Length: 154
Length: 317
Image (tube, rainbow over the protein chains, first blue to last red):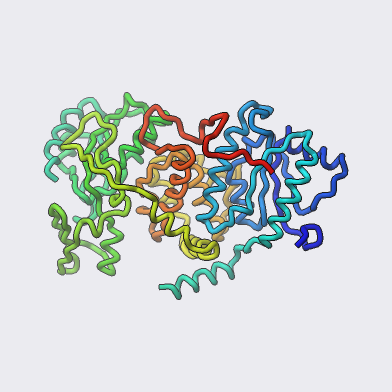
């Protein structure tokens, strides 16, 4: 299913101020066609992104989370994205045990001049989330269902 | 056990230089031990040492900072002490470690499960490989291996890794830990895993016993669970909130958790919390080849980086 035709999903994007946000801007200035499911949150550096931003988004209704920062070695603050890389990789590997599809979370590096690459990233990621469909919504009825299933198993 | 008298003597010898030594004593019944704070030589006589000494006493060290503290540790507890030292949360000069070789502790929960209900226990008899519990006038015998805590079955550090005074013979045998429990759990479908967590986390009463018992939880009054700024958690009793706290706990313990299992043991509604911590440790171990609480001069993997990471691929699109 093409991401452009289907109903919009909620994708949260955490972008570093210096590279990826600039890259998204470049893509906009270049008038590239992009899916509009992504809501962008600008942060000072990818090192500012606490992995908990991502899990909190995912359990509170986001269908996908995209994190993007400067390429390694290109960080405005020299080493922020090196720390981010470790944290985000650990998070990506941790998600499966929670029952959250790790494909709903992705992190990547886009520089301010890479407008075309930004377009590719957004389109591909949005398409992937549309293939996965809306994330299961955690609410009281889902909890009741989980409890009923557990009670039956015993 | 046999080394108790020697341990008592060691503590008595060191006590004049120390403000307090933390050990275990019998709790409200013979089955339950409770932490003992020894300040005077006569307090030392109440000390016990047997497989019922389940508590990780390293938890108290950060609270007693600034005092000269002695602490009695099992192998697993010593890892917590090492991790605290590595992060400079306690000072090596202030802490005296009494190390013990441990062959495993008992899981009260397992005994409880076997008996159905466990109230006041009249008597406990311990032998080399069995434990006999007398409750309601009835005797129940268990093999120690059958009621040992899960962590003991995969223990790699029976003897304290760090000690100023070591009592007894160090044990060298190591069990293999291949994270089989984590792998088995992960084989379930996404839906089943999510349902499992929703079911167990719904039981949570937000007592924060898991946090209070955790030796590595050192934020005290600044814990994000209670902070209004940043406001991570609401006062709602929704499952998302309770679950989010466990994710916070796991993330804050990434690369620091020594798998002492105090979170799971202290949980009043038996939520399998250690599973999350172990999953995190498994990934940290695979990515960075690092085990928390084994090196005093190591560096937590998430506090450091390499320009070229061996096990993380560059994420190209």
